[in-house]
Length: 234
Image (tube, rainbow, N blue to C red; front, side, top):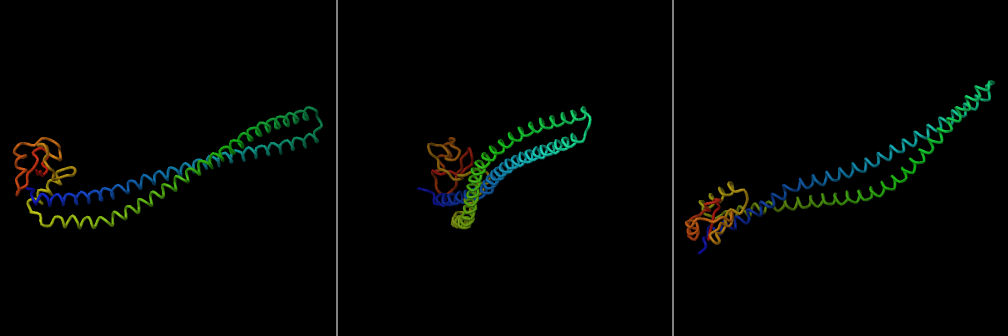
């Protein structure tokens, strides 16, 4: 015949485990939220880094453009000076300076064209990547909203679970309750009240002594696994 106190303890244990699961899930939610927020932050940093890279390329192109204009101004100045000089060697020197400046301009313009092509390619890549990143961020924000809703639902249900647990303690013999609470503190995880099957504890799954195995069939007093100290019944 089943021990009525054990039956009440099993109901208590079920409600206790249910409450623990709610509490554990509530504990995990801030951690999950922090992970998602870190992902969003990383995604946004990737967008900013790509945007900054584009800006740097634009600055580089503008600098080249200013340098070309400066050299063009020098050429114009050299040409004006040629109109004023009277000596051939001075004229030739200015001609060399003009030719050198024109060669430098050609090289600068070639570099500028390469940078402009690089910018066009980088912009196309950036837009595609940004679109994908924005989609991921939106999905991640939705996950955070879902976590918030789940967190609120758990908070709403935890009070009912606590009330159910408190109610299930009513009518249980004080010695059984005291042993249950002690086992709960000593044991790393539930269950705390377990059956004996084939002379093995349903908690630690180790073989119990014959004395414990026989005692578990007796009604009216609690019995314990001699390996893990959980309360046992047959």
